[in-house]
Image 1 (spheres, one colour):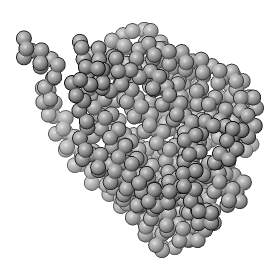
Image 2 (cartoon, helix red, strand yellow; image 1 turned 135 degrees about the horizontal axis):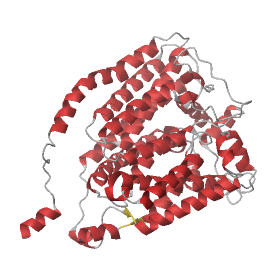
Image 3 (cartoon, one colour; image 1 turned 90 degrees about the vertical axis):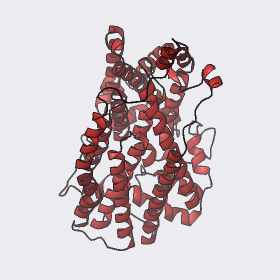
Length: 501
C-alpha cells in the first residue's frame, strides 16, 4: 500500500509508452529545418537587403548594423529550434531582429529613415553599438538564470500552502463580472458599439470628449481604456485555458457560454480596427499561447510567421487608424520600402536620444520614476515627466511627437551605458527564470482554473512588443491593471487542497 501511494503522488519521470518517438522525430525534423532557417535569418535576408539600391554609406554604422542583424538572427533561430518553449526570450529576439536589426539595416542601406536624425552620424554608431552591447547583457543575464536551479520548496512551505499561485474559482467568476461591467461602462462612455468599428482617430477623440479625462492629463483615459480592455482579455485567457486543458469543462454548457460571451466582448473592445496594432498583437499572442499551452509547434510557428508578418503585413495594418480623409496612402516599390518610411524608428530615435542627452545630461531616474508613478495626475505632480519619445520629439522641433522610445533608450536617458547594460541583464535574467517556471506551470498543472503564471507569461510575452518599443510611460498603465487583476484572483489554497487530496 505504501509503495502504491508513493507512486501515485510522484508519477514516474520516465517517458510513457511510445513517448520516445516524439523527441526522435523532432530531432530529425530540426536537422532538416535548422540549416535553411539559420541561413535565411542570418545570411540570406541580410544579403538581400545589402543588395538593395540606395544612397547609404558603408561606414562603421553599416557594419555594426550588419553584425547586430546577424547576431539577432542567430539568437532568434536558436529560440525557434530550441526544444524548450521560451516565450519571453523568443519574443524579445523576434523584436530585436525585426525592429533593431532588419529594419535599421534597410534604412542604412537605402539611406532613408522614418524620423530625421538631427545629430551627427557618430550618434547613430553609438546607438547601434549600445543596442549590441545591451543584447549581449541580456544574453548574459539569461545565461546566469539558466545556470541557477529553480528553488525547491521545503515540506513546511508546502504544508502551509506554498507553491505556484492558481486562480481561485470564485474570484475568477468575479473577474468575469468586473470585465463585463468595466467594458460596458467603456462602451457606453464612448457612445455605443459603433464607435469601435470606425477608426482609432475617432475613438481617441471620443475619449477626450467623454468628460472622463481631465484637461492636460492622460491618466483618466488610460484607466478607462485599461479597465475596459484588460479584464476582458484576462477573463478570456483563463477560460480559454480551462477549455483547452479540461475535457470536463468542454462538456459543461455554462463554461462554454461564458467563453463565447467573453470572446464576443473582446471582439468589441479589443478588435484591430479601434486599437493600436501592438495591443492587438498582444491579444493574439496571449490568446494563441493560452489556447495551446504546451504545443511546441505553435510556439515555433508564432516566432517564424511573426518575422514574415512584421516585415510584410505590419506596416499596412494601420488601415483603420485614421478616417477616410486622413488616412495615409501607402506607396511601395519594394518590400523593404515600408521599413524605411513608416513604423520602425527605434534605432534612429535612440540616436536622437543620445544627441538630446548630450545637450542636457542624464536624468538619473527621473524618467523611470515618471513611468513607475504613471497613475499620479499632473494636477498633483506638476513636474511629472512626459514620455521620453515626446520630450525628444519636442526637442527635435517635430509636430508629431508620437515617437518610439525603445527600452535601451529609457535606460540610457536615466542611467547611461552602465545602467543600460545592468537593466537589460536583469531583464534577461527575469525572462529566463519566468520561461522556466512557465514551462513547469503548463506541464504540471492539471485541469481547472489553472496556474496564474500560465496566463501571466503569455500576456507578458505579447506585451513585450509594447514594452520594448516604448515609451514606458504609455505602456505602464495596462501592465499595472493586468498585475492588479492577477493578484486579486490568485490564491495558494487551491494548490494546498490538491496536495492534500
